Image (cartoon, rainbow, N blue to C red; front, side, top):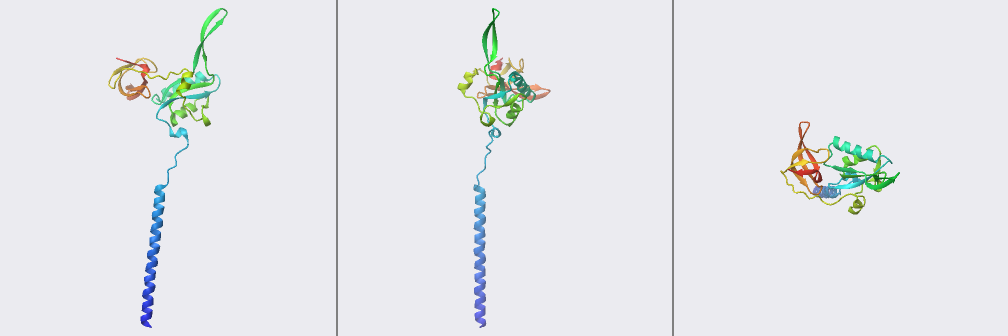
Length: 224
């Protein structure tokens, strides 16, 4: 009887150990599967277009209140200057066309807006530039689905009178140039970088006693 009890006890102990090992293996397998599931879980990308931004400049159409076109243009240009966004926002324009008007026998050439209520902005789309334009007084939104900015195509730009051809100028990094137009007209500087895509050069300027990189359009410089 004693021997039978000892044998039963040994068998029970062996079965308990085996059960513990089985539970441990199942737990380990579950943990491994959970870790793999976490590692393989895909990242969710933002569906907000303006949050994603864009590295290339494009022309965008902005809708304004009637009669506010020139005011919006001036205010955006002022913000660009104040916030030093010349490397992200390059040009603001109100599409115009010249027409001849004869009044009281006097022939006169005048400029009229091609599309009243619209302003064009050449910029790199990101959170900052979107905010600047969208929060300018007189702006009601960008032209596009859900007021999200949609860049103009080359054909659309030509119809609006926007020139799309590349500017070819014989300059290299290290050349000394003079700014001949724009806010920095008359400034002389040395080229640090050249962007053929954006049609700009970067020069080093002393602004308020601090060295600052300023981006200038190729059409606004002259090689010395």
